[in-house]
Amino acid sequence: MKLIILNDYDQASEWAAKYIRNRILLFQPGPEKYFTLGLPTGSTPLGCYKKLIEYCKNGELSFKYVKTFNMDEYVGLPRDHPESFHSFMWNNFFKHIDIVPENTHILDGNAADLVKECNAFEEKISAAGGIELFVGGIGPDGHIAFNEPGSSLVSRTRVKTLAKDTILANAQYFNGDWSKVPKMALTVGVGTVMDAKEVMILITGAHKAFALYKAIEEGVNHMWTVSAFQQHPQTVFVCDEDATLELRVKTVKYFKDLMLVHNKLVEPLT
Image (cartoon, rainbow, N blue to C red; front, side, top):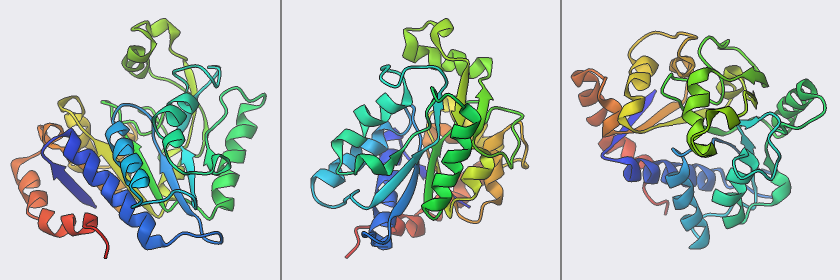
């Protein structure tokens, strides 16, 4: 496990974007070899997406041979609703890069058979050869995707009832009216993300500090689903200083001392 500690949100976002860029470039994707990338929504990855758009527009990076799989989608929210995750991804990322629309995969929260939709999503991931790099964010209660506290740590893509804290947190996107927030969602499972060859979790802000503490300094616990990634062979946590406020001083020092090595992972490739 790696813990990358940057000064602020912007630096954390840039480090994450450079890491994704380098992973794609080193993979050397092509017509017979697509790079598969798992992606989140929410406010945390926005800075990372902006940098990736910049790299694409200046010619450093292409998404032509990249397939994406998004973590989740609300149930019952029209696809063209401004707060659907379809709208979020297209408005904030996909329409600004050179990705082929058919290579973007987002769960359909309006499918006639939601269980069938979830099973088909798992099959699409398998058909694509699995996920090379799954990027995620977490909630203040340590949930990843919509794997709320108490979720199985071997869960697969499924229908999930949202916790009240999640509904209240997402009310900001619905004019502060929590009653307008969908109460259910489709989400990849913890096991789905664990199957990825590599996982990168973005954690920024003081309000996520206790979740980061639970993620790396205490044991694996299904009440804090992000803690499962302690057991993944290739996990990278990327955070800012504010997110480390609940960590022990020696933990922070240990990982900061490794930054000279870890920063080599995002150096421009020659």
